[in-house]
Length: 225
Image 1 (cartoon, rainbow, N blue to C red):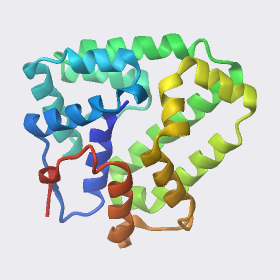
Image 2: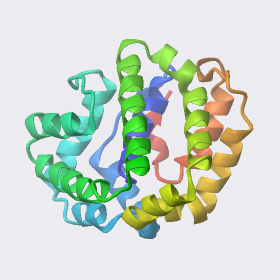
Image 3: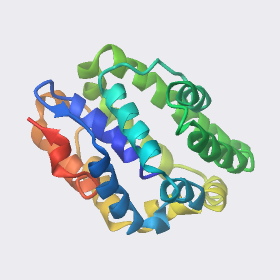
């Protein structure tokens, strides 16, 4: 889901306390236009919600992302809980989050047991990491490379039938993994990083990750030193 790149920007900006993150509707619109150029990697049930977003919904999304950066969003431990919290905290975009989640769960429920286990395991790890992020952002970024390398390794080690199940239910995401040049370059860069890389002490590496993976989608004015 390319709109989640906004959330990644929040995390990236948070690595260094001297960086101020502020998202605006104008910046979000620029990101959406860029996302549309690679819509082949985005599920239709996500693109439909993006394309139908009103200005009021975009503003509420922007406000939500800025609140997340400031640590004002309630802690959550699962995707379901995240959606339920969005429905309470941002009622205009709550229905969109719910629609995306319901479509996602339809596909998830059709996965093989091994594929479900892979998805569930990494969802749990991600939300555990988010709890660390809320409590200690420096600790989160110290562990970020190791966690990402573990994910890449787990994907590479999936059984053919597990990969086939993921590809059948989530073809756009698998297409991005297999074909997107930008994603391939980012994976190669991450593969070559030492597992104990500490992004809190290595802004050059973090900037390279952002450049390879996200700067294409993020207006430069979103981050100001």
